[in-house]
Length: 250
Length: 250
DNA sequence: TTGTACATCGTACGACGTACTAAGTACAAT
DNA sequence: ATTGTACTTAGTACGTCGTACGATGTACAA
Image (tube, rainbow over all chains, first blue to last red; front, side, top):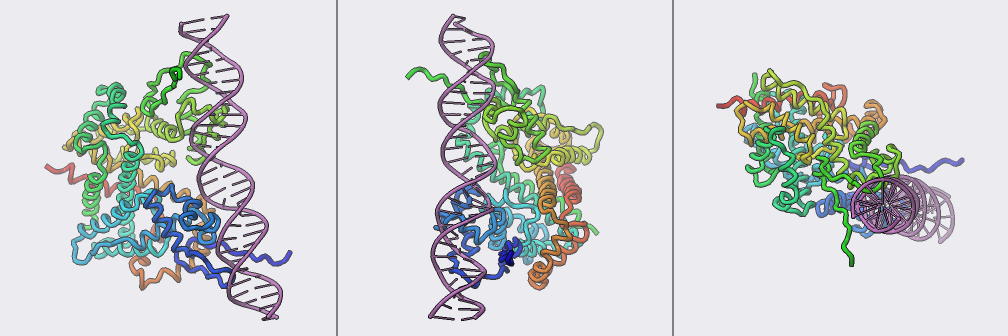
């Protein structure tokens, strides 16, 4: 057995930070990791994350499907790179001179805007995204909004995770509501015509008195069964109120 | 063209409430919707939602794959039925005689326990699950925890959605942390040995001073990079604090 | 007794991620 | 200048998925 000439698999972290050694032999590369990731993001924005398949993305780039594996070891790494790309390039509002509530509100809105602009990201985004440069820049910026509020370092991390969790779930819900509306191809009125009779029979006010009453009130208050933007605004106020005792104390 | 003998597709709502007409002709059914759903839930609990494929589930039930389509129109409807099954059968703690904070805390913990017992459900659960009997029973019970607190009907719905959103994201994060640990098959120590050098080089304290400081403090405080149960407890307290002003007012 | 609605199931289609292999390219070492 | 080798690109193929379609056989209604 002669010495194996194994090409070590590129690590996700190396990929995120672009620290892998570049090849000095062989044909010129026709693409770059950045080009692949940018095309993937654009495709996801246009047609959703489920449209981002290796075949489709390769076609978009004018290459054969398997060629992409030269740049990215697999699909999951591609998604991680896409997310970090977003985090690196997202807009971040100015925090200087704002009171704590406005500072925290600002970073929440920045994240929410990101997820609303790229709805696929809300579903793909894990609680602890891999430590790429974009994620680190985002984390750094967000933590700065929490400095000088009397929080310990550990509390700053806890607070931020809590806040971003709220933003993510709000964005997920909003994206899902949009997707459902688009997929059903049915207006709320049509839906009610189809399902109203059954629901009326089955939603027994004696069995579910509170649910029927509250559900009806909520449905009438918003013009649809679920108003994502209202839920975000409401939830953000509650979240800020929830942080106040921690910040005001002492 | 003779008159078509079309069998109308079963509607998801009809399926959830089991109001579809039962066949009076043809061979005896070898299964029931409930049996299919129960088997799917058990399989998902045992091996995760990605193990619940039509083929695998059919094998589990001793039937040919396509047979399942007699009972359930498709995969997505199956997942909806699985969720409603969980909601219908979940344990719900007693609320009688508790102060509002304990009441709200109780329903949050009930949901969290459900998601921790069935981790696949946290990922599959949408913000507004289809109005099945289980979902309605859950909604009714949860709303009762919010009665008599001086909230309007619309506010009760808003508060509940906010609370359950927090629970869902906490459960999602916890499940994902578990899954990542299991998948990497790498102890935290091993991971650090592999990636430590790169991270040390790339996490420049001059570029990310706050992130490095806080990240290190948080990593040391919990024994891992992410402590899901701690995040839930912390987040629940913040969420309750956030509801207090709405409830205490007036 | 017969027609029909239905359960069951085998086969097959078009997607998916990606492993494997072959072909060709351009630099490094000679 | 030549040759070896590391590399990019691409074609083919495997095993997975959800599920459409059509054949077969069953049991009740007419």
